[in-house]
Length: 469
Length: 65
Image (tube, rainbow over all chains, first blue to last red; front, side, top):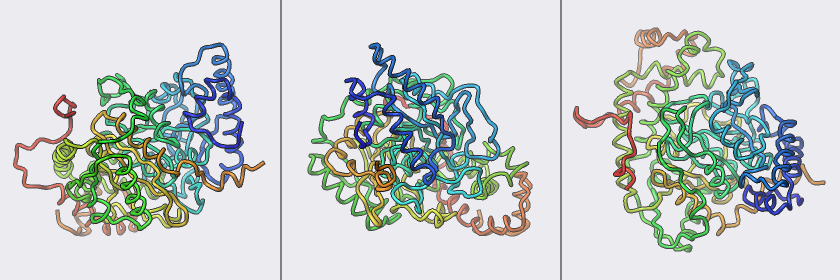
């Protein structure tokens, strides 16, 4: 096979045509893991033997005429807050260093049933919050575009691993942006689906009512292929939506002429002004969408600070409740950053929490109303290119409201895709938000953008530098 | 919610939460209290007593329009 890292869709076509062996594909990923992961720290637990065994089994099944779909034989990874039967699941924490679950999370089960090859468990911020931390058992993941820089989090290993081709796709979780943030800073695609579309069963909670599980991959099309396997009702998750599974790939390639894109300019131009590089990426993306035939409209919502306040109060309270027992008895065993965030729960009264949840209903209604005549809305994903990993502020939630939390508050699906490169050659991104359960439209627009722009042809220089023959 | 917090109030809240903090942790918490207070103010709107929280929404057909 060539040295180029295939997308999931490309690999699936080659595997189906028997031009690529899952074993060969898995070995290529493992070669990159061995060459790069000493620096990237994307994996906390590599399951090399299992991966090769699964790849061989996939190859046998496909050669015997029993392919199970486009994910069959595709190497993937799971964020280390996803339970995996018989495989350590540490949540990046000292508390769970010896934890080996006896069941799989639903999302792990579904990806296995789709025939994926599990490469291992991926680095996360501790219990999906608070990083980067340097006082945990495993080091934080590094950004493949420049290893002195942050990946964002908390699905940091998934972002780094996909960007560097250690895996072709992976699972992230997103409570206030933990899929979309790393997708943005690592230059890949990542979708937070509609709340309830993908089961949270078997995944460590961050904040119950804000937590989402979703795929991260090099392209939106790959995310669509993965979400197709992940979506669906699950009696193990009380928030699971009893709705039909959308056909995630149905609208790919059908163009975007006539679709209506609302732009929330005030989020990224006034409420939290983004970097010049990010703004240039957004501006150029809008030109691309217009050239592709979409209609652009301005959208006005409540200030980003209102969404952030609502989401943060809910988040801090639910997290403090989830980890109260350990906070009371072993606070010092959390990373310094997560421990500090857990303390904040002491400041929030029950009335504050309920007022935030009442505000949540209003904000969600506001977004619903704003989107009535639109197909999607657009804003930034991250305020800037990736910061240096040792210069990430600890308390930026108070003065730098994030662009992703509004759609956790509302439960609406949102995807981040690469929109070019800014300062230092680091990726910048845009965020597209769809209507409830309208993920196919999000994929349609994101895929059209990726195919109309050159950004999917460039991988981090580190990859070719370290893996050249 | 006042925008700053004195030591007595801090000790009360920490005791209620069951947290035992070092003096350095307490000092740091006091520096971010204003940020929490501002957020708590932001979510309060003149909405009257009938406005429901969003604890459960069912994605009825009208939600999907």
